[in-house]
Image (cartoon, rainbow, N blue to C red; front, side, top):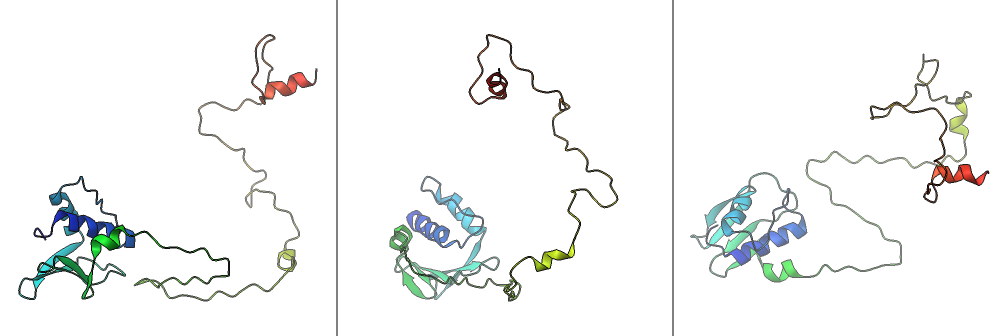
Length: 187
């Protein structure tokens, strides 16, 4: 892996970040040194030479879903994804294409490896309040067996003051919208 140039490593990491291949993300800033980038890559891949040392195969250390087979060709100095040569510098810096559609659109998401099987949910066809008519007593907010709900407690060490708000002294200014303005509006 040491024979791959630093710009190619940075472009590969930029493309990996864009495609969300590596988690947690690897910082690919060009100010990072090549040994730092290689150390981060070694957390995800080990390498193996194939085809008489002209290709370097990146073997994932754990299952990385949706990541193609990644090789680096030293003769052509480019990455191969699933055996296809890819211009990684150009592709990693390409703008994301998008389109705004004013029509109804159906989104489908790929199924992740080792995810639980999908269960089809039944759609609700009932309308109205019939299912809620079973309980005739209103909810009091207290637990069963308790006579009254407990008072809310705060995180502060000060107990709440139940005395009404005292207006400020005469001649002091009150900010607009404060509770003291309501007192003076009744005078």
